[in-house]
Length: 505
Length: 33
Image (cartoon, rainbow over the protein chains, first blue to last red):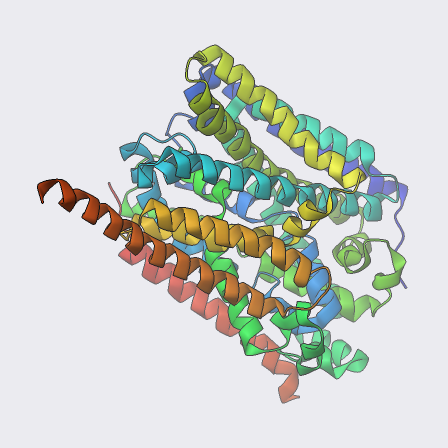
């Protein structure tokens, strides 16, 4: 029997959400004085320590999907869903922070880069690479941000039983306010608050869920009573469904590990968190790793919540809500009482809006700095700031419109594969280039063209007509990106070396 | 009964691997301070 929302759930939801949004908006107002020039608005003051950077990174890393859709996967598939449902979260994000983080910070300073695409372009000393990266990021982030609004809408609808439109619009408007006013600094502070909030809420929900089913052993006993396959670590029976290959075989499983490693450092909204970080000592770095370890491990808790939902409610959630399996965690929250349901609702908003804010800041800042200022270098500082602030509004509202109105087909295909594409492309184009000196702009451009094409093809062949295996597609994207990046880089170097030799001959 | 523990062991394995990654990368990282 599924729980129903009560007035107490709605009141709790409104209270928690108001508290969260008010504290985030306050950060925007406090930070507005530090964001009065375009460069200060774009990059902050480089004074953020390990705790705030760690929490902000966790907040952008944990999307609305991580706090909602992830539970839906383990709810629908059982334990075999955990491989895609973020079980590798720390294997991805910890090296991003401890290995790439300090190096990225150093590169941002050395190359005087204020945006992630600008950093990418500077690594290759190429404005074309910067502009291409900016456009690729903008398109993929724009479609990826649709999912953030959808998560917030779903949790509101299931927990309060009322229409979601007003709550999501208010959430978007508050996010716009603190971003426009506070820029990078205000957003980084708001992200830290959101990161801390969702950490507490998700652990609490998992604890309540496991208590409701009677503990770890009872959880699996109840799953087995429904279907023995729900406790299998891999389900061979899913091999007939290509888009579920991540839960069916070793190729799919290994692709989930690769996905989380590449996404962590491939997402520009993650990388941008190191832009405002101060130099770290060994002790700072250990503290940051600890903060991230606790706050970015919430998918482990969420996996348990999803499984507990299955143990408690059987398959009934699948038909009870238009959100299908994604409604699993909100129903667990309802069963845990109004205090928890409201807090969890605000946590999903925190997860969604934080990822959205991180992405919108990358898009608005980068489009202004790396494309518009490149084409019109005479624009003064005040106009550039105004332009970037205006673009924040545009980039926050476009995906909101798409949640209501169906986006064009190509964008819908890109939406499904955006995380895979961004991860695979920028793992090489950005992260590997920090270490490989022979990387060349031809390699970066070829890798982006290939990765972008595979993203669109995957959206169609994997998610729409269900013809390609998910794991095969991920590996083809990853290996192809590696091959084009290395192959065309070597070719570019050879062409350059020949060009240098010719005048002396 | 054994089957019931297997998924928990998988999760535990990933948690141990994550701790190892965190410790190793934090020790090996290049800091500036």
